[in-house]
Each structure stands twice: as C-alpha cells, then as structure tokens.
Image (cartoon, rainbow, N blue to C red; front, side, top):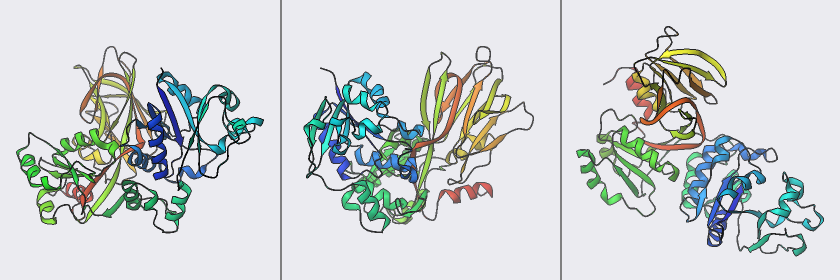
Length: 460
C-alpha cells in the first residue's frame, strides 16, 4: 500500500492553534503531513507583509515538534508560489499525495465552477484525477454532489483563524490563546503583525525559562560551567539553548538546532568568542539573565555545482568559500546578480560572509567587520593577485553571488561552509536566506555592537 501524504499548504500568516490541531488530526490518518507555507502570492499581497524568515520561524515553532509532520520551506526559500499541480508532482514520487482544502473550495463543484476549477492552474484536470481531504467546520453544509471524485471529509470542531489573530494583534489585543506559547512569545518579541516593519532585534528577558545545554566536552571550563548551570537545563520545553564553549561550539549548535527556532545564549569558554557572552558578565547578571537583547541573524543559502556535475544546497551562519586545491592559484569568475563583476579573479580563493561572520575568516583576510544588523554582507578575496589591490566588496541584502571556477580541470578548488569541507566544486552560488535565521542572545550591556567597537578601536 503506498504511503499517504497530506499536502497541507497555506499562507499560515500566522499559524495558529487551529492549524496545529488540523495537522495533528491529519497525522493520525496519514503517513506524513507536509506543511508548506507559501511564497509570495499575486492574489494575496498581504502574505508578504511579514518577511519570510519570520513566517518560516513561526511555522517551525507551531508544527516542528509534531510526529509525522514536516514543515517544508522551499516556497519561502525560493520566494515563489508553487501551484497545487506542481506540489502534487513534487511529492507524488514519494507516495500518494492528497490535497488538504477547506469546504469553501468545493462549492459548486457539481457545476464545474468551484474555486478549484476556476482558481487553480489545471484545476479541472486536478478535480478529476487528484485526491482531496475536505475540511469542514460546524455549520458548513456540504452537498455530496459537489465533492471531487476522489475525496474524504474530515469534520472539525475548531475555533480561530489567522485573520482573527492578525486583527487582535493589530489592535493591541491578546492573541496568545489562539497561538502556541512559543509562537506567541516570538510574535511579541519582534512586534509582528502590529502594522509596521518588524525589527531584527529586540530587548527582553530569559528569566523564568528552562534551557537545553550544548557544550564543548573537551573544554574544561565548559564542563565546569555545565555543572553550575545544570539546575536550569531541563529537556522538557526549553526556552533557549545554553551554549558553553567558543565560537566553534556556537556554530555547531546553530547547525544542529536552528530549525527548532530557540534562541542561543552563549558563554565564552574559548578564545575570542564574538558570538558569545563574557563569563564574568554572565555570572554577575544572574541566570537566566533578566535583561538581554535578541538578534535574529540570517543564514546564507548556498548552492554548489560539484566537480562531477551534481548539485547540492546548504546553509551557512558565518561564511562559505572556495580555495585552491593545488599549488596553483585559482582562476575565478565572480558575478553579482548575473553580472560579471570580476571576470577573472586570480587568488587563493574567495569568500562570502554574513555580517555576523565578518569577525571570523573574513576579518583575517583583511575585511572590516560589520555590525550584526548591517543591511549588507561581504565578498572577500584571499591573497588576490589580479585585479591588483582588490580585496573585498559590500553586498546588498538582495544580492546573489556566483563564484565559478574558470579552469576546473587544471586548477581545482574546494568549497567550505562554516569551516566544513564540502569537496571540489565547479561553482558556488550564495545569497542571504529567505527562510533560515538563527537568534543569538546577548547581555544588554555587552551586545555584539560593543564587540565590533572593540575591534575597530583596537581594544584588547
């Protein structure tokens, strides 16, 4: 018997408890539920009023802990709206795909005038050939003649809607009863759905929250502090991830846990610790710290063409780069938004970096570090021979960079993501992610901005 996959698409703007309950009901009947928050929609311009990374985080916070439920962010990541027939084609190779629709979508189906017939691409064809789960609420009457040929009905006993949540938030009312606790905290933290552009940072507190520990077991101080903070580290419903170690430990924690959308609070047991908090300040402030700054920082979305022609994707929090694999310099073409800006870069390699990662490898290559909330990211050359004197460039938020190897056979290059080797590549393409971000937490008086100031003004 084929696996049954429920395709639960929507704007989820924002996702509420009613959406979560629907996902739970579907998961009890299907082998897998795919929650697909849509990208920009021409028929619903309001969907894009809240940026993709916030919508993606809210979906992960609402559905991420449910068995058999997978939140798929490809629409948000690509900034596109995938039509229903394309969704079916994408997932039918993995099983029997069922479209989840509300009962309003099938009204007048017998007359071939339903919203599916008139509003979906290839709607008439899908009506006949596809499978549908039709959701009904109390008071909704369904004429069985209007049902698609292959359909099942699920009767719901639910209250609430995304429009109810938005209306309450817009007017300053309490919407928490309609949301999961984590989603409610996240919306409050960044002022979402308040009628203005949400900020990427917020002042708040971790007081009263449990944490989950991510620690460097090889670091003696980290092991000692793990015992000290042990009373606050509980696996049940953690509110943040306590990271003990250096920047490498933080990068590993982000790589493993960013989809959980929990804030990361780091205590530096390493060396420089640009992504961490100073231990003396942490111990003086009390734990969990009552006065902190949340910073939501974007990840890079990376696409590789490997040496054998295979294509791969990945995410980086700090940086990604290519570097020569032999004694010969690399010959690279660097394009920005498909325009060749460096037709032939002769160098040891080239790197792209987020603002948060600008204090790492990019800085050692000679680039100036950026403030965490700078509306820019970096392209940096390593030991550049040609063009003469070129070192780095600032990139706007909407830029896409492609680094191509001009001589892959004779001058191979390897790629790296946050220091992890990916193998030999023909090209690397990068942009700031439209869906992936990580929240870092800093003591209010010892924020990342102070660390950058210390670098620029040569404080030790």
